[in-house]
Image (cartoon, one colour):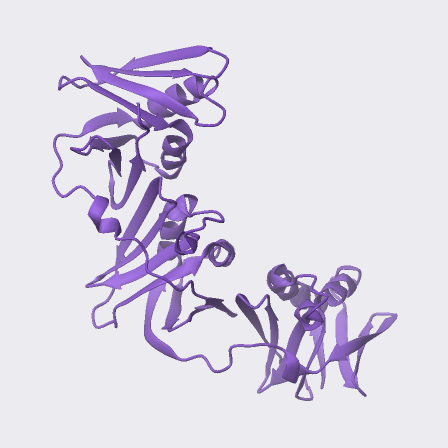
Length: 366
């Protein structure tokens, strides 16, 4: 193996894939990068066993094909301390990687590439293309509702589902739910998978690119996504996701229309004195007025109100104030539509100008 590459190009790709490198004394090869060069492509691969990320670089200069693994942290440190415009020359000789940069030379230990875990034998059952900005928006609108270390392991991720002509992302921790949808082309094999929370966070970073088509492959136990020169692969969470359709409102009465800015300001004011543990507030709606009240364990209270256009029956509910704020932080329209289900145990929130998203928040017992 032998090749040359510009340092500023190499460091750009290393910074992207090195996020997956972890300290692992029992499996030290996970601290390494798999380096492969053949057919004019230099491939850099990292994995933490749950997620694999490959970054491909076209090589136009003369090279000798080969494959090995070396420390990802050390290689990145070498590049960071080299001149940005310098050439990095890398050559494998007697199981040692010789690296030359300007007037500096390094010799790094390698580990056999055959021992590096990878997903070379990826088989998929469904595939489709979608614009990167659409998928990024769907994740952005729903990821806050994912579970965090929930014993119900299937909640610690995001549902990605295709049914009919729509692609859905759904996230819930059992107390609130976010759902987004986007149209997809027809004749795609239906699928329903759960992507782990860490994978969603990493995928969202990779989608911070100019809008372009990306290809997604759905496997039995993995998902693979081609994003620019990167290939992202993640394990899936086994298990059955809750039937989210059962809590969506089938029929909607006249909505309560609320200005997002006024509502957010009001909630932030009363949240100051909400209970530290339960974060509950009361909402009273009647006679064209929206009133918010809070109290805490120190018997302190707060009240805020503003006028709205509502003349229906009196409404009194209790809710986690930060769950409401999380939803408002994802909505960009001026107004929201608020619906209360007939059992008075949850609310549904829709954006005024975005029919592709909706949110459910379970109410607190009063």
